[in-house]
Amino acid sequence: MQRVTQEIRTTSYLLHPPLLDESGIPAALRVYVVDGLIQRAPLKVRLSISDNFGRLPKEIELAMFRMVQEGLTNVLRHSGSDSAEIKITRNPRRVTLEIQDRGRGIPDEKLVAINEGASGVGIRGMRDRVRHLNGEANVYSNQSGTTVSITLPTYGINASSEDADDFSAVVQAS
Image 1 (cartoon, rainbow, N blue to C red):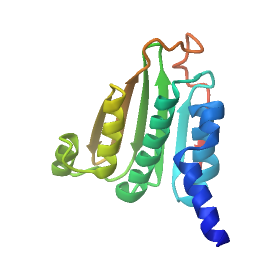
Image 2: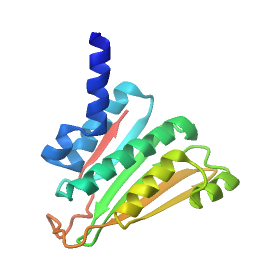
Image 3: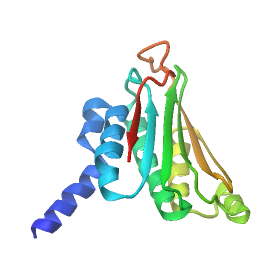
Image 4: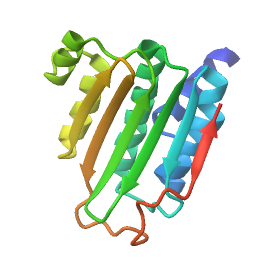
């Protein structure tokens, strides 16, 4: 019973970590990637996000958190890569999330199906979140790896700094 309770708590935390509401996407991803993922999976992850990134609307932060989870799950399940890189940048009008691996890539016919929305449950879920937030999602792949690129508008949201695209913090999980 104690193990079941712990699994329920872990699942709940992974769906919506309290740190996301308290401190925002940079802190939640650092804890998820650095403290969580390396304990559960054999994947080295480099997270690049500015120290002065600031906050986004809660709906965007939660969507980004879940998209990172799905992206890293896809890397683990399908790519054959032992590493991934997550880059998040923003300016006053948009936020961009990139998840990149150095795996075997997606076969051309499957990539076409994914880009047409006909395949890939995880990618389809990501696209639905992006569409709901009036954003754009693209998947690029070749024999050197795959990149999922997501851009979301942040209309009217003030960046915490004029230089919010500067990557001043890089976290390595291994």
